[in-house]
Length: 376
Image 1 (cartoon, rainbow, N blue to C red):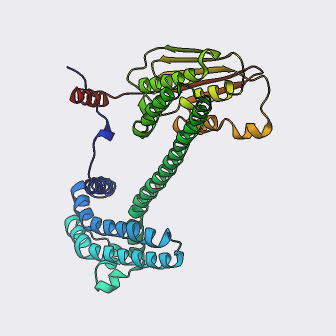
Image 2 (image 1 turned 30 degrees about the vertical axis):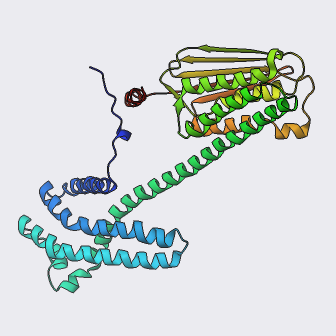
């Protein structure tokens, strides 16, 4: 029997169900805390009266006051409405205590404490506005709301941080497309000036690469095997252009199957070798590319010959855009699990990239197998 890996992210729970489950957990937690003073069932009964007030207080604060006033900079209005909301919540909570909770506790546990009875028995308004009892109600109400709001604000902060990170990553990935297209069109233009018969082949190969970029790279991860294959296609295009003037060595060691990598992460390093190692140099040039995969460890080495003349300051500022882009993407996508070394020597430029890969889940394998069967 094949084992099926279960992942929590594979389960989608409706938003309403998430909220209901959350409040059930909070309610049980509060019940457990207050059951230290009384038995669990009594604490559960009392909490059933208080929780609707807590829930209404929270949603009014989190989904009305905070977004409508605090986040829009209306601090004075927010403060006034918050004080009003907190006051109403405390008074309603205290009223529920006087009507449903305290009489039940006095009867069940036969409470005879004079001070307790004095502050909770008598004229309703007098008991309602008892200072000590109001302070206790204030603490009890806002303790729960403070805890829940802390969770809510942390969640909002995390979501905004992730959204900003995703936007930055999308912007960086979007830069790869025009940068690659710009360089390839320049190459194609050079061939067309000489009326090279290889132009149609390059256009056809370019269309395949662009199709991959547009339709397969719009996800967070792609199959490493597919990514490397497309890099091989790119190298074939460059070979058509440089013919025998370039010596290319491309070695792959290890198993590429069922491993994932960020899309177009390898391309800038290989493209950089061609653009700055071959385009700027006449005569025989060389590029060595080595990919090694051991388990979840991925290693890429790209070395290329350098032009004899150094690039001018102005050109250096404009060059290596794709390389700088790749470095930024690495910092965002693989923080702490990637290591990039760049060695710029007199006649050789070398990059060595090490990072940890993700494996394809059993669920993803099954889905891919079904898709393949459907297309047979």
